[in-house]
Length: 344
Image: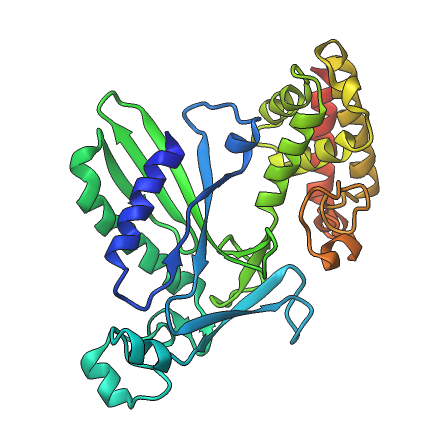
């Protein structure tokens, strides 16, 4: 239902922006806990979807990735280049080439190019692009609203398109749309998610592995018994550690590591308690060492079926608990919360 609803919205967005030189919206991809299978599906569930962006006619995207040009790891910028459209202009006559016509001519006869609208300098601006997308969604909703049985509210956000759908029955659905630009032909995107706190540039996009996480859980589903308890483990732990300094990302990462260490046959329901203890033991060790490695980066155990850039597979592991080495109070709180969890 969620993907169909968003799909209808995006289709209307595509029609509205078809004759402009603004990014093209591709089919959305459901990511995150709700689509990985371990969400609690309560009223507070947020359905997250990735919306890939493609360049409009006469433009191309060039990704400047982390560790190049002084950019931090797992971050990057999307450079927008103009492409010659003379051949299309001669064959179809529906556009004027941005490179080979004067600015005066273009301003008079054609919509502005992307560099003039959603960019800061030569780089695609996350916040400008998000505001455009939010406006596009509002306009698209006006087109399809009569066919729906709910009301749409676009919630404030500088990097996401956060939607709240309120149905006549009182049911509320929250959806979070993240924009992303694909890296080459890999299933890795530079996304509009929040950058690190000290990176305030609105041209900074963040490398997202959300699709790889989804593909990994699907891979496990194919390998594990039909009634495998790995998702139940994750549901229980995220419920018990709700509002903790230990986030669902940490718990998911631990579980993903264990899914490559413990054979699929050992995740059957009768082993649920053992697997819960395994997750807690692994987490406790990570807390003691203040070291929890990102599952996908520099991990030789990631199945080869999961598409990853070679640089990610061979790169240095990223410590998700690095902040605990610099924040002793947070570390102490995490240990305290973990101890309380064990006592339950």
